[in-house]
Image (tube, rainbow, N blue to C red; front, side):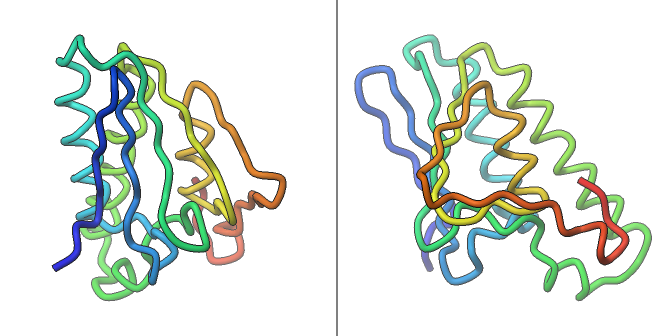
Amino acid sequence: MTNILLRRDDDGITTLTLNRPDARNALSIGLMQALDAELVAIGADRSVRVVIIDANGPAFCAGHDLREIRATPTREAYQQVFAICSRLMQRIVQLPQPVIAQVHGVATAAGCQLVATADLAVAAESARFATPGVNIGLFC
């Protein structure tokens, strides 16, 4: 099984790589939990001076994993997804180290939120950003 989140440490720089390229790095519950857990560990590690969030594949992040959300269309399931996402985004904001989003391809919906939550975003000229969730009744 492929790791959905990769971590690389190099001289005080930790790179967290979203690794669901076939799903355009959509934020599944598992990916959000893995990212949150790594950020908890990083927050306590004073040897880490900066965090870079990047991604494998053609997109930075397509937002929430809509297939996963649609698989359990209940209020409780939606609340769980958004609670996990909110905790993750707050973790980024509160992290003592600066967080840099290294963006290529598309960042949409919660992927765009992930970029906006970082302290700094560095985007390729080809990067694109969108919040299409309003078209299906969601708001990041």
